[in-house]
Image 1 (tube, helix red, strand yellow):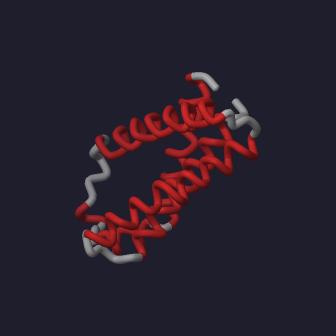
Image 2 (tube, rainbow, N blue to C red):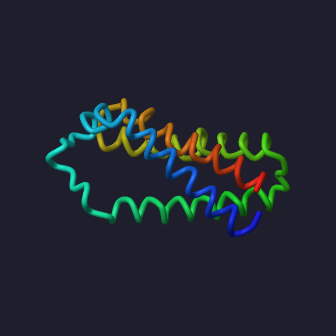
Length: 127
């Protein structure tokens, strides 16, 4: 598990996020109170920032996997899945609930770290 695997894991999760939010984009925008007119698609900051965040997550997940002695694709994927589902998603739920935003945002935004970290775990233990 080296730097290449961290970068590839980040790319995979980032691409999954693009696909995921592409699929649920209209629902997500409605729940978030956004419109096509209110989004500046030419602004690179969210795209670059989200990739840098994916790199941070992949690097930390690599550390967790190595420190825990997790080896093998299945174990890496399950560990990533568990961290996404039972660490990241509850934080998202807490933020959504306290900000009194639509509860649909919990599953919409919770799928991204759950599947994204599962992909990361898979890649980190196989590349």
